Image 1: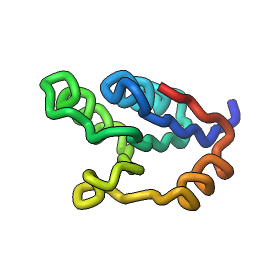
Image 2 (image 1 turned 135 degrees about the vertical axis):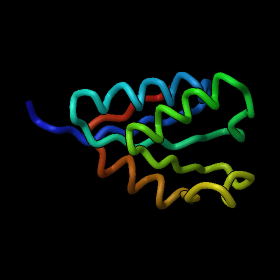
Image 3 (image 1 turned 120 degrees about the vertical axis):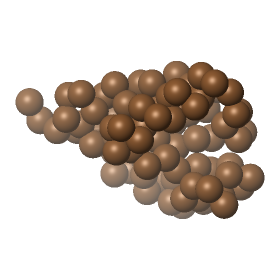
Image 4 (image 1 turned 30 degrees about the horizontal axis):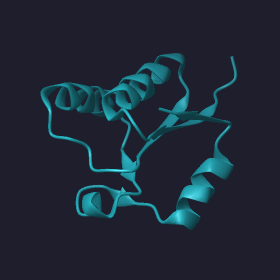
Length: 92
């Protein structure tokens, strides 16, 4: 099996995006997750899914300025580069 570079763009459902991203690592793929549109809500479900990201060694990134103190911030050029370097993009 060929290892793919997969980027998960968490637009509408951050918890689901984290779950999908962590799950994709089971197949050995290189996975990135970018939180978009709004800050990730501080909920129990999001906390559980964030633990999965940590276990899967996925370091989240964001395009949301309010989250820039906690996560690597991607401006539009950096996001375009992430997309360009990816074999597959998943929007959630």
